[in-house]
Image 1 (cartoon, rainbow, N blue to C red):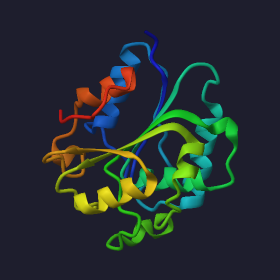
Image 2: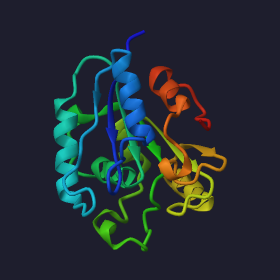
Image 3: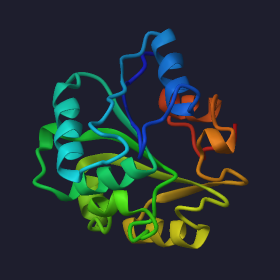
Image 4: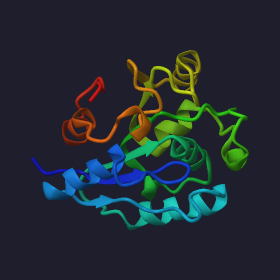
Length: 195
């Protein structure tokens, strides 16, 4: 079975070498997958307009044949929602999206992400951007509580997987290798499970 083209989008500050996103990119490349892991401009001082333009450049460069998959972590989840709500080019539509450990859309405790807050939460726009979108939340995430994650999933009409003890599903939460996310990319296996 051939692997899909996979676009992996980091959050504030980037992912770092031991983050599950970089582990996943290495695993997919090792198995012959085509992987794109862009480094957004000024990852510690993000600007929505800049990141949106860069996201769309990478989507435009993606192959037209075969399945196209996007995995977004943290701030990149809000980036994806803004992308979905913007002036949309149907050529940029993808097959599957996984929104992992989103920052809750009205999170106020991090001034650096003010540009990204309050994207439109319209399920029609999310379906316009991807045939299928799924939300994954770690229990104990300081950026999005379980109640907020459920609220977000309901607003967007998305399936929600909760990872017990997952925190922000990053290196600090011990999410380097994460075989379940590799299985999701390879075969759309759900629900997502812990490491």
